[in-house]
Image (cartoon, rainbow, N blue to C red):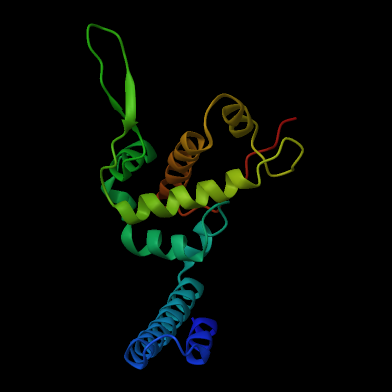
Length: 182
């Protein structure tokens, strides 16, 4: 925005009133940037002081923001299992079955949209770096990426991440990385 404002100040074709409005918008954006930075610092401090958030941040694809959001929002005792938690988040397919033939549709998108988005974005970041020769790539994820589109694989990984998050929160255990099979 600063580069745009300096270019606008040098431009004589733009009317002075329009230039003044752009300067006001630029000042407003600067204030918003400062407020966002302050909130990010607060969330980082919360993450550092919350032991559950520290545990959850060890999961690949779950960063400090996702970890503190999960730790402050989710109460694992409200769910019987990780599967129920994933259903609550809307990370499972809707069933459209008839006549004994099972058909799975799109994800239900039930539950907390923000938590679902955080898990999906985290899953996309894991998929972005998933390569056949990498040490961190899970075999089932690589096989899924060969057969299915990336976003569908991201939803499957987000579902798995949700189940892991529930298990860690319910039992208070640390993350155990799955062994990589070649």
